[in-house]
Each structure stands twice: as structure tokens, then as C-alpha cells.
Image 1 (cartoon, rainbow, N blue to C red):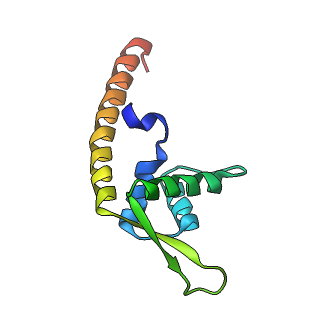
Image 2 (cartoon, one colour):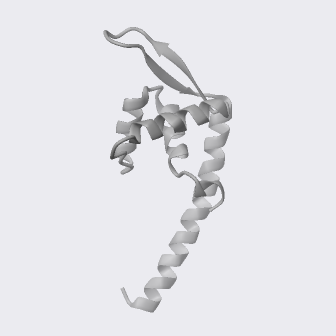
Length: 113
């Protein structure tokens, strides 16, 4: 499964940000719409580590949003490099999808589902 061994969330995060620049909690809510639930203690911290990693790799950037009452928030934007990564992710996920589909077809033949 190539680079998806470590994390499967990165392509989803980039897709969400490409659709609309958002801050961390909004990204977490959009992940829920894909069925990816960040639960448990420290899960938002994990998301912020992923965001930091993607930023370090040049796949996204952020700007501070000071327009709301309360503390400033980082709003994340995808970069051209992030869009290229997203394109490669689609290609790789299509290959993974084909592999999984073939597995399901072959397994169903054996177990008469």
C-alpha cells in the first residue's frame, strides 16, 4: 500500500482543505463526514501533528485568523505541491481500491456470500 502504511488521513485532510480553507476543528468535523472519527484523548493533537507535517513538507500553509472573538486560529490552505500530492493520492487510492475490489470478488466466490 505504499505511502499509505503510516497514515490514511493525510489525503483526506488535503482534500478537505483544497475544497475550502479551514481551521483544525472544522477539518476534524469534515473528516467525520467521510466516516473518519477522531476520538479519544489526544486525537486533536494527532490531527495537528499531521497538519504540521504537511506544512513542513510544503503541502499546505496557514494564515492566522484574528477576525473572531477569542484566540486566533490557524486557517489552512493547500499549496500547489499539495494539489500535486492529492493528484498522486487519487492515483494510488484507485490502485488500492482495485486491489480491494478484486480481493472481495475472489473471497466471495470461496465463501458463498
